Image (cartoon, rainbow, N blue to C red):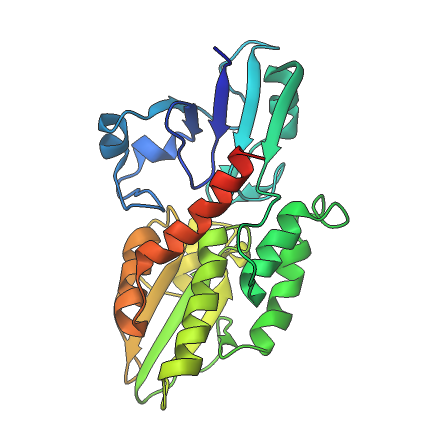
Length: 272
């Protein structure tokens, strides 16, 4: 039987060894981006895990037949949780002739929208795929042509009405699809929409940076993150699947549909 491993990312794969960083067990509050399940829930459901740092996988050289990296931050970079998947480690553990499935390269949907398109191009277009900051540089342009406002620490907060601040990662298909769904909901259904600000979590190099956007949000383990203000006062904040559910309730969509949309891409890649 081929030895397959799924490194990091937001999509655990059943029947494959799923690697995650030590923070998945050392920090409370982690939930699966797809289902909101805890680490213990996933283990009980039959997922096998390897808990290890991305910089030093505890595996011998030349032992893995297939490496999967679904919906991960840019390879060989650093986020607020530490170093991301390392290409040197992938090459070290792969057998000669082994396969590295890097993101998703095939569409199963005819109609694409702006934010998800950004994610798709960055993950599949050879001309930009190896530039880890390409999508981050393009993100402000997309926001400028959307119903959202790109917010930075120090910008004003409305003193009247509802205001939402949504933090997303451009490397996350879930987050990019979320923005497209909210934008569409606003175009269809909102006569007098609330203030909706967004920010790129790539601006947060350390955990404490998130407090500059959403005060008191605590340890951020996954995106998206959301803060809700009423009449200028922060009233609530959420992250990961809880944030997705919160926004679904506000803007009238089903969070499961976002997960299913992205999962279709994962299935397409698996059968590529």
